[in-house]
Amino acid sequence: MTRHSPSDLEQIYQNRFAGKSEYRKKIWNILCAFFSQWIPAEATVLDLGCGYCEFINAISARRKFAMDLNPGATKLAASDVTVLQQDCSLPWSIPPDTLDAIFTSNFFEHLPDKTALERTLNQAMAALRPGGRLVMMGPNIKYVPGAYWDFFDHYVALTELSLVEVLTKCGFEIETCIDRFLPYTMSQG
Image 1 (cartoon, rainbow, N blue to C red):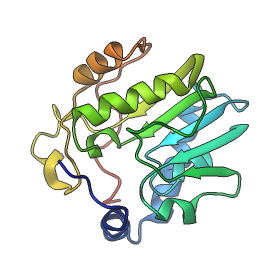
Image 2: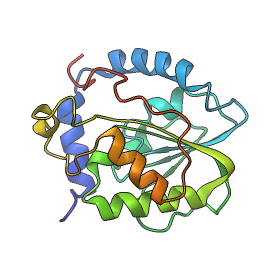
Image 3: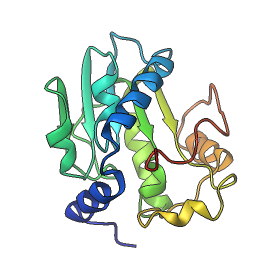
Image 4: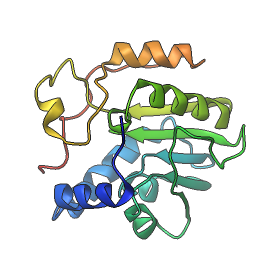
């Protein structure tokens, strides 16, 4: 399956999120306060599939990276964020054992297939320091079966159980798994 080009992604997201930036910033400030329990201020952190950089711009961290194919990410990242515009399923330019935390939100369903997801998780495992954490959230097809496909760029159907299975396969240990966390979308706020 072919993924969307960077320019396609930029157009899709401009249309989807037009006029919602203030609402989304408020939500991300609240979410960052919650996620800071797993991402300490002295951490080196990567926002994987960073989109509009709302998380990485809002989180307190010593060193910040953001990765996305969307060229819009480079324009929206704060000055203290290093943006990596690359395919996350290919080798990362971040050296092994560099990151204390990787955060991703509403991203894995956008990968073109399960093979790309597994390759991405293997890259994440390699980039994390021993004891590092992968913190993620995203839609659970179990709770939004039809609405899951309302977004043209969703390819991979995931539940909390399917993610636990592939994470374990890739060497991650599961600390916390919450099957429902937020409303399904922030594009309609």
